[in-house]
Amino acid sequence: MRRWIFMAMGGLPIPLGFYLNHQAATEWRYVIPTGMLTRVGVGVLVLWFALGWASDKFVGSKLEALLYVNALAAVMLVLVLFQQVVIGQFWAGPVGLMPQWFYLPMMFLAAHTLAVFGVGGMAVVTAVSFGLMVMVSALGVKMAPTFRGKPLLSR
View (tube, rainbow, N blue to C red):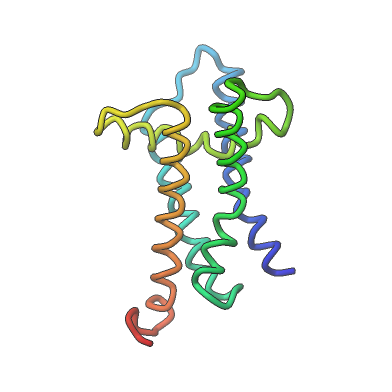
């Protein structure tokens, strides 16, 4: 039961993405400052690091911790890529909107990361968002024993 609750905590970017979407849709004269979007993206990465770090208490192995932390993100990635690449349009309704809301807080940060390399496109930016989240959660899982007083490289 604790594992399912922990996995559901991975859905925390959805309300944040809903709020950003609401701000952009209702306040059409209001431009969201880029500094705020950067802070939101970094905040989601900090949240993902914290989920990776906290997963040490909920599961037995590090691989299992990574799977639980990123399971919902992987499902959302599959839904977004299916809509973008296979169908070529987004679905209406919650099944089409929730994956977009999930990755919306990370889009600005991922797009600027890709801009350094001159790469773009919605599917690529979404995949990079997922990759950043997996890397940060893996770092959190790896660093968890260090913060609890155990050496990082102990056996």
